[in-house]
Length: 107
Image (cartoon, rainbow, N blue to C red; front, side, top):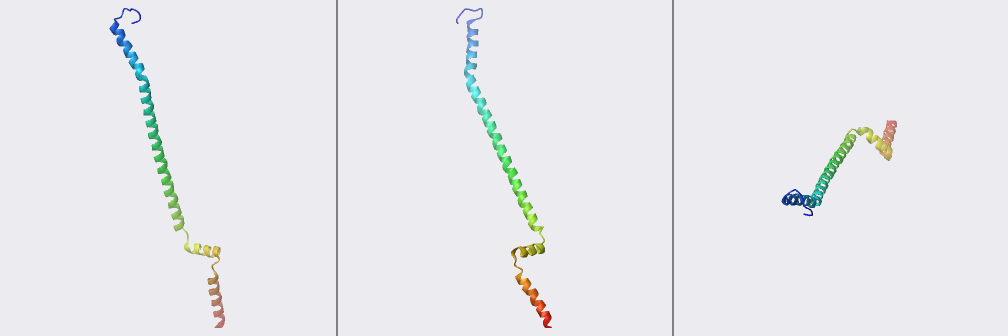
């Protein structure tokens, strides 16, 4: 001890050693808390990544379902007529109609 006190030397030594022990363990405790915080943050990061992937999967399934519904809801006759007008492939139909009209004049 540096100077004499009314307290027993063994008590002051025990208190001093306890204080030194706490101060000595403080960096390790702080690093442990930091590691726990990092592990928790990483866990939340992965949870958010999984959630985002699930939401993206749900959106892609909904988009595919909507596309299939649009395909099946088309009227086939209207679709064929629109395709014929766009592609200008109605030549055979026009020739058939012309042949029918000419055959009508023969009789």
